[in-house]
Image 1 (spheres, rainbow, N blue to C red):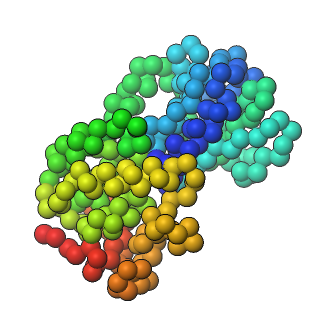
Image 2 (image 1 turned 90 degrees about the vertical axis):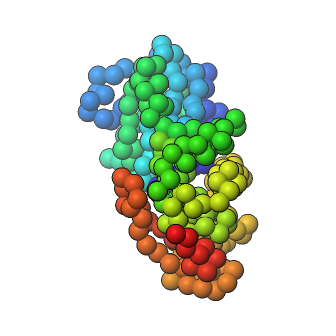
Length: 261
């Protein structure tokens, strides 16, 4: 699933190409939006919040999309071939005089008024990539769930918006904390959250989710179950965590991230 940095970068690229221009095409290929006409509205800006993408349009409307597992937006000059997938996977097309933005495999496409945007953002925790994110606010939200596993809690978008499995996995490894550790046993929570924020910030502008400093071997433990730890050689473990609403994957090195109970 694309994480906050992927959505942040998509928003910046879309904003660079579309902001300030008028929509000449707004083809929303979602049945319940078939009668919605956004042509003629100005794109006032495109921004991300956690894993959510919002196109702010004139007239106090916003187009809201979410990538979930494999959605994406692609930008093309007019006349260029679309290469994001077959046409039947296209869920939205926005065009201005200069650009076409094509949304592939988008499971969430909504048109929201200002109150709808407010309700959406009200369900989310602080955006970890906000330049002014309050780390102590995130920590307080985490501490309100003392018995939840830290790996599960960091993935809860109502606590903190933007983290996905890659960044949670790698951040916990860098801090030496097992993902199944109960929150009340986790030391130095502000430092943990800050590490995750800084790791995502370092990657957001380049489209690579690396934690090792090596783009050829980007991850210490994520996706490496059964392979040797890059530090100690112990085989990476894989399991499930279910301390919250969802059953989530977890990767960890049992030596570098000893269990805490």
